[in-house]
Image: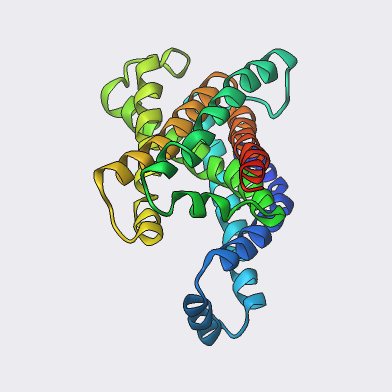
Length: 257
């Protein structure tokens, strides 16, 4: 019982955040879906309120499952660190995350100049609902799934299969590096269906954009998770979204005047 108490308390503490994240991501997705898709969903579930409620319940389940089992896996491989902020670590996180967010914000202009639909797709999230959804769902729920659970699981498997002679405290760094790459680019690959849905096709350039935008960030979050703990990966992910959207709001508004 003692072994599951801390993971359980951690998972339960995530419920309020998951509820808010689920509500906002639900309304955000409804804003992005076409009228035909929304009509089909209403016909199936009854109303948009029920759709959002179902999505919220799913988000809470994700948070509980990933929080509980992710904690256990992270602790088994030495990746679990206390949920607290330290000034030096926080500054390092921001020093990495803010410039990276600025760099990725250039998607609007770089890929947007050569791929039809990029700028309109980027602009969809520039609402209060979109920003909150991306910060809470992307910054917290996705990090629970991709870093705390998935990256930890991959690292555990690699350790047990190829490096089991090492104790937990001495697991080779390459185990976590490989796990980070697998988690980051699995996350990027998971965006391929949505990318096809947005652009209606999948060209080499569109595929490159998909992996750059989603894979590069994932590598940074995974590095911070391994070095400082999951709370810094969450912070970095949230900062990415805030910086990118702030730049788009400021500069696209200026350019469109």
